Amino acid sequence: MKLRLLLLLLLASASLSSYAQKASAKSANDQYVCLPCGSDCDHAVLDGPGSCPHCGMRLVLKKSVVFTNISPTELCKTVAARPNVILLDVRTPDEFSGRAHEHFGRLKNAINIPVQELESRLAELNGAKNKEIIVYCSHSHRSPRASHILTENGFTNVKNMTGGMSVWNDSVGQLPFGKALLVK
Image 1: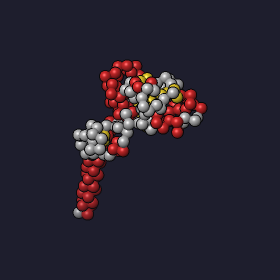
Image 2: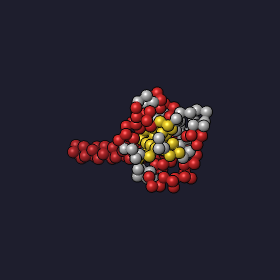
Image 3: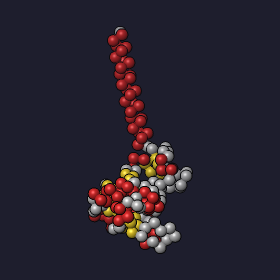
Image 4: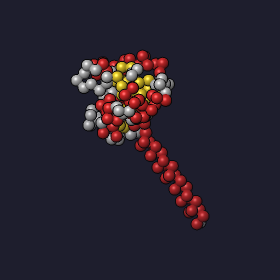
């Protein structure tokens, strides 16, 4: 009798553990976050689809946000080690060319596709689906969204530069490689 009771308890425990694991996996799969916009709300986890209550961006499944964030210092190291990395500037043409009010400069050899045009211009990057792409903007508000758009469209090695060009001078602007990458 005691053995039978012990066996039933073990089976019940295993069933509960299995149920808890499935429930935990399901809840992790059903978590939503703001379409990355570079604000603090990117880290808020919500239970369902809709719009972010802070910024109004569309909510996406948390598991779909798979790009990596890197600092300007890491970007410099990456470009030094792998000069064929693709640098994608998602600011407006005026910001890219230095004609905007804020002039932070741009990175040498960068491609300019504004985030507002990215989805309609993805074909320009089709040859780069498996290449390393580092995305940046001025303050790292648009580049996370662009990074997400790229990964959702099959780009496999996407990185977002945190802080954007607004932090470039303070973080790497005085370093030789930081100076060499910057076009004013």
